[in-house]
Amino acid sequence: MKRFRNLLLVLVGLVGLAVMVSQLVLGKAIARQAQDCVKICDEVPLSTIVKNLVSVVGDVKISNDSDSPIPTRLNGPIRIASSSRDAITTRATLLVTDVFQREVKITLEPSDFVSTTTFTVPQSRLLVIEGWAGFAQMGHVAQFPQVTIKTTGNGNPAGALVFAQPGGGGWFLNDPSWGIKLYADPDSTVEVRFARSNAIGTATMTLTLSGHFIDQ
Image (tube, rainbow, N blue to C red; front, side, top):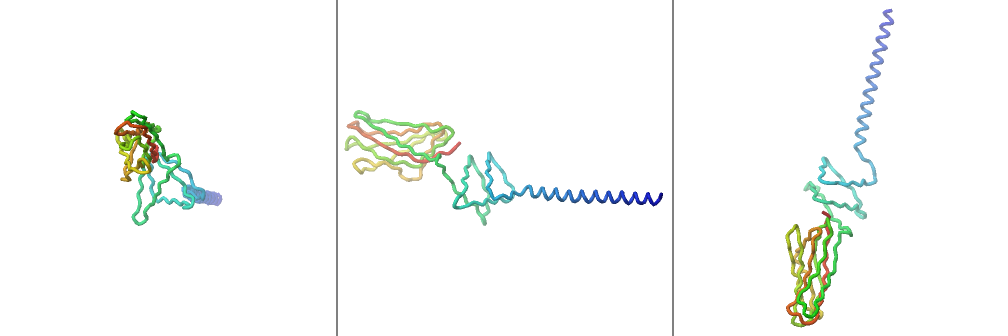
């Protein structure tokens, strides 16, 4: 009877030891699996859409092909923390749909001193006018073209004078290249004005505006 009880105690101890060993092995396997789950080992780039502000803790490495880069479009502000020893370089990408070009034409008939033409900026898009160029043909040798561009940026009206230089039997219109940009709010109106000092003859003006849109 005593031998049977000792044998039973030994058997219970072995069972308990086996349970403890199995739980330890299972715990290590689960921990290893958890570590593997946070690692993304895939040669195919992941497409990620980021909205609002995202904070990333730790090191982020982006590998890309210089011959075929992946374009990234950002709406709104972005903060980049970079090391002076290993600085991050960025390059802006302009999509075709963001390019702005528009040609405006104005004709002043005899007795007309001034005329304007307008166009509306698309909704939810900020227009940046970066340059302009054109040509004016006046109705009389004593006439000088007066061309201006008016916009509204952040609710404030602004304007720019188009420079005119004689040549080619008329007047070349251009941007003075001072680095000045005009901004036009979404759904606002851009106005181009053409005027002259007297109303003799017929005068024509063609002006091309160029720039880009920024989504809002």
